[in-house]
Amino acid sequence: MTGAPLPAPRGPLSAALLDTLRGSPVPDPPPPLPADPYGDDLQLSLYVLYELHYLGFDGVPDDREWDPRLLALRAELEARFLHALRTDVPVELTATATQALDELQLEPVGEVDGSLSHFLRDHGTLDHFRQYAAVRSLYHLKEADPHAWVIPRLRGRAKAAMVAVEFDEFGGGRADEIHAQLFADLMADLGLDTSYGHYLDAAPAEALATVNQMSLFGLHRALRGALVGHFATVEVTSSPASRRLAEALRRMGAGPAAVRFYTEHVEADAVHEQVVRHEVVAGLLADEPHLEPDVVFGIRTTDHLETRLAAHLLNTWQNDHAEQEKDRVTTT
Ligand SMILES: [Fe+2]
Ligand SMILES: [Fe+2]
Image 1 (tube, protein in one colour):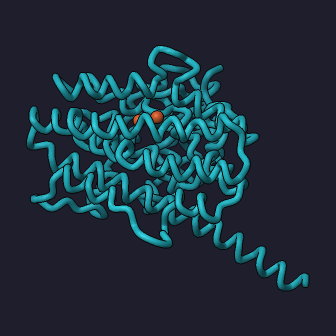
Image 2 (tube, rainbow, N blue to C red):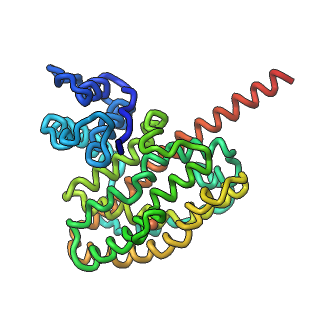
């Protein structure tokens, strides 16, 4: 078995979908689609449908990946999600990919609100980091996989450079250096379960949306520009954030494998950033200049969904802190 266990449902749609994957007949009529495109029921259903294209689920036959009824449902959910993203992340006609990437790199001065890596470095506990790593494991245990889908859709410079970066992400020929494996090593160091998909039930809808976005962009050739924008955003923002996360783990007294995942990304992603900016993005736009708004859309959408996830986690942690303070005051 290489896949994950099926998760718990989060509403009528995901309940019906999970029953269907366990072998029940497709419900007729189908359950209504959830109203909230960012909510648990829609995001979990979409996540489960996408997972059929990765390692799948234990007990679900591999050929359900191409079940036309599941693909039809996926298309409806994708349309809702994409419509919400297009509404919430406008792209003006004059926006350029270079500007959009530069905007990501403006480092705020002083106390930083809304940044997970700043919070974890300056105030976080080991328990916060465990929660963070568990939630992130949904992506990092398949790190770089959704981006590989874009390779056949690229040509020339963009293709060569994309493959060069992906080669590093996949360990440069060494299984023990695959970044997903380095993340599993980090999880083991933090005392977390490293099995694939183990923390799906623990992940909030905001985290599912960040992974669904990559799968959506990766699986659709029409969204290749957005996928490249997403990839560029990850590489451009990773190096400074990884430095802060390595500092956080050192301060918390975590083991060397945990720290290594981030120190590896400080070095690697400083190089990847340059390759992605000057070869992947510039190469794609030299070939297909009409894709520039899509690249910007991919960059800004990534920022939009990451901001929502950060707000959710920071809010949870701040509420926990407030509860503890209340307990402390009432017991003293
Ligand atoms: Fe990586
Ligand atoms: Fe990278």
